[in-house]
Image (cartoon, rainbow, N blue to C red; front, side):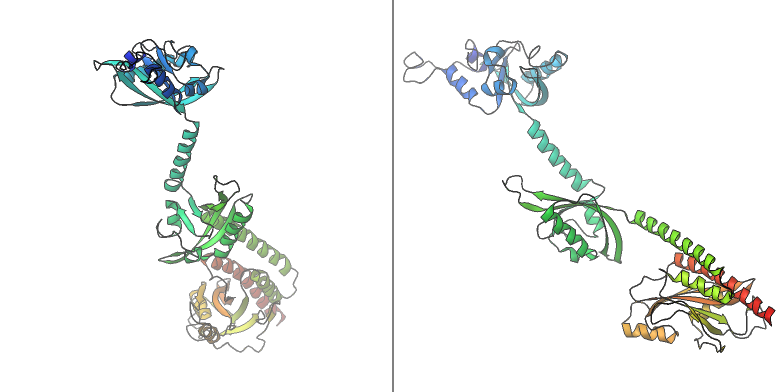
Length: 476
């Protein structure tokens, strides 16, 4: 038996074929209509079966045999799929959905799990439609089906791509072999401060102000060697209308190669990143706080070994300077400490008593033995600090190097200074002076957390200087 049951085939699937001119299948008119239909069905790339109005299998082609293992002789004549091509538990649902196509308009598409002859399970996608007789009434239905593993894999890949590029909560960028973005998702476009189409084809240097070289090195490595074993954290500067915004992106990289070539042909790099700036800043702040607390503890232990309290104050200064500033100065109030609200206090003048070397590294040195006041202008940050009894920050700003040097010289600071932080030295309700921390070019400005640390150092230094005054009075 071939792909169909001979008896009743044409009556169920369509009108009778016209008789051959010679009255036989081998005459000049061509082969028998049933044989032609069987040949056509067996030559199809899709599996095909047909059912009569009672749900009995009438046709079964070779592709259906290949997929499920049941031959046409074994399949044709069976009542539906129950008991052989589907599980008993699924038979009723599958049959009702298939037979419903006989009374529906157009094709019906379904997905079923069918059973193979050896007991395996195959997921197929079916397209079913009614076959009508000469009177226009349903005489049966045909059902074409194919395995859908490859189709589902493709659809899943497409769905995954669309989800990544539309709904993902992390950035996804496809970078071509020239290291230029070819496709970006919405999250990445927002992170880069531009639109999804505006970023395409542009060099990374036009999008980022910092971290470009590190990022391009990573992409080049992935193109040549493949993906790194772990994500990389890259600090970048993003151009925004408000200026540069510094961000930390935890990035993963995947080399993309064409699946159609025998040898891997690199298509680019898939770059996935997540913004972890807040977490990294929190880690850095915690590490910085631990370091500074440790420095204060070490300074206290070292200062306890100093016989001279004034020397103990400079020890505190040296420990505080590590990783915090480039230079530091200690200025004392001329004429001795001033009490808060003293109406008889003379105009405030400051005397330089200690400073770190500005030409190179080294410990702080006590100076100012002559007691000559430093000629600070009235608006000098150190004088403002003493008058307010609180910390004061100052910076040269975005100016030319020569203007920055002039700014530092006018304030009696080393010429390479661009950032300053003054903290008042107070003890027992009296103002003893001011400590000034200085940073050069290339360093970040002092922040509020820096002012808190400087004030902690100033409290310890003020206690040591106050003790030095008491010792001097006792000796006198």
